Picture: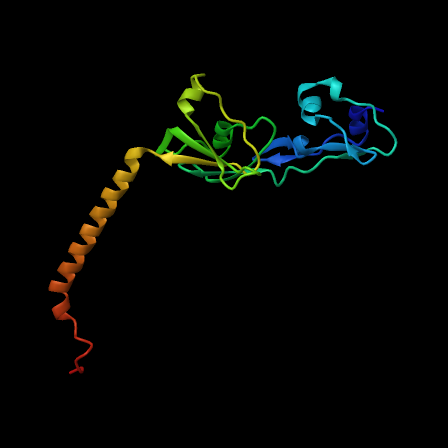
Length: 198
């Protein structure tokens, strides 16, 4: 019996809903077969997604096939997007695809500098990948395929911060002016709590 036949007899790979899309909920990149205590070099992704039949090995009695779930395989989208949050990382999901799933960019997004923060198992420092949405859409840069636990951060436009600072300054100015006017004009009318009531 082949690996494909065994999978079919087991009713195939389970599916579920991720962001309203039906997807296979097995993480084929981490699936494996153990034979006589050793892991076999089988690429489940190539077999199931690319149709590479060289990975469709013949099974033997006692083989153990493991399909891990992908529910823990999520990436986080934060910053200037319509809806911040997590997305399930499925085969072939790219950074722009994940941003689209979360509702796309917000009006204040700086699309020229999108950061992908990726943890490195052998290093304390994460890998930082920078992509440009316009360059990707123009075919000048490749989109990045996501990995579980990636964090995508979309900056706000460079001028956005200056605008926010100006807005805060104006608010502080108005509040200070209002407080001063209130102190000068309303204060004398109100009774002084330190003085006994008459």
